Length: 138
Image 1 (cartoon, rainbow, N blue to C red):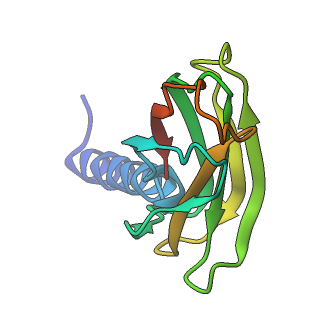
Image 2 (cartoon, rainbow, N blue to C red):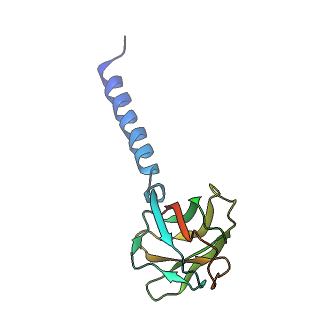
């Protein structure tokens, strides 16, 4: 038979352990996937999205594409002042479902913008489609 005082101590110890596990799930785990779509300029010029994004939790920002343009895709992150965040990445047409990290330590709540272009321009046309479809984890 367990004494009542021991039961109270076990319940209290269990609550402390549960609290430690709850604290262990911090803001770094808050990132989630967000759908992204876009159309590249045929000229190969950089398109800067006007949609502000805000990092959820501290950590990486990464992108994967389910559909890529024929000439491949270049993708980067820009700060509010249009400074580069992290390292730009490129994908070839055949690299669908390849996730790449654009920045590894972006702070919680940081505002940023996506910028992208074709890997190589196609000023005379003939490179259609110019669209990208993917998922961005931030």
